[in-house]
Image (tube, rainbow, N blue to C red):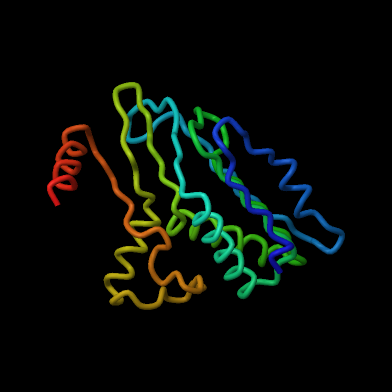
Length: 195
C-alpha cells in the first residue's frame, strides 16, 4: 500500500505545509485523522535555543520511513500516512517534522501516529544539532538511546510488544554520534585520523 504513503524529506529552506499533508490523508472513509507536529522550542536544559539544524542521508531516511509505515499498516487499520521532515536550519517556533495518519477509527490513527514518530526518532538517519546563544551540540534522540539500551539488554533481539520494523532490529542508520563540545569533537577526529 505504498501508494497511500506520502514521505517527504524537505530540502533546506522548504517549510512543512501541514494543510498539504492533512489534505493528502483526508478521505470520506476516514473517521479519524491524527497528527503530530514537532516544533523547535526556545530553551533546552536552561539554555536559550536559536535553532535546530538537521542533516540526513536522504535515500536511507526515506527507505526507513517507508519501512516504519509498512510496520504501522501491519498493526493498525490505516488509510493514508503522510510524513514530512525538514533539513537545514529550523528556527524557534517552526515545524521540523509532521505526521498525519487517517483511519476509520481514532484508536488506530492515534496509536499509529505515536508509533510513527517514536520509530522515526529511534531509527531514521536524520541528525539534529541544537544551536544555542552560547554554542551548539549534536544530539541523540532519547528514543534512539532507549532503543540502543533495549537492544543491548535483549542481545539485539526483539523490541517487546511494539511492532518491529522488518529488517530494522537494529537502527537502520548505524551509530549516531553525540558531540558535546569542540574539545571532544577534536579528540574524536584525532582518533578517527589515527586509525
